[in-house]
Amino acid sequence: MPTVQFLIYISVFCIGTWGLIVGGLEQFAKEIFLGMIAPLIVGIISILVLSEKNKKNPGNVTNVLIQSFAGKMIFYALYFIYIFTFYTFNPLPFVISFVSYFVTLHICEALFLRSIFN
Image 1 (cartoon, rainbow, N blue to C red):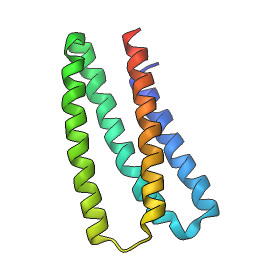
Image 2: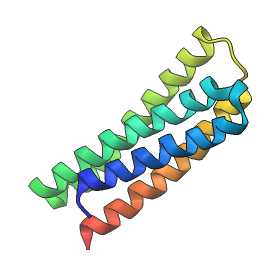
Image 3: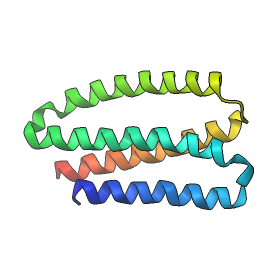
Image 4: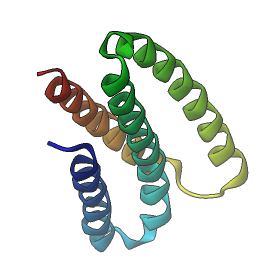
């Protein structure tokens, strides 16, 4: 599957599930969106970088994965600090949304990596 098509699928999936969830939980729309958007953007960037590095030098993908993991953890820590410092909202829907999208998008990223290596 081409990279752009895969990114469109995961973007539509995330925005679609956010819309469906918010349809029933309108009071938590902001929290759920903030829990979805960071993993989505980071996932898109990660897939684009991994795809590009795999085309140039497939042997270098492991190093990119390690650097990507470290960068993601730093970004997510700063994101959580920023969100909990400057926004006033219910943290439970945010954390549930974040964890759900984080895990789902990492599974999608792993499946994408498997597909580009096959």
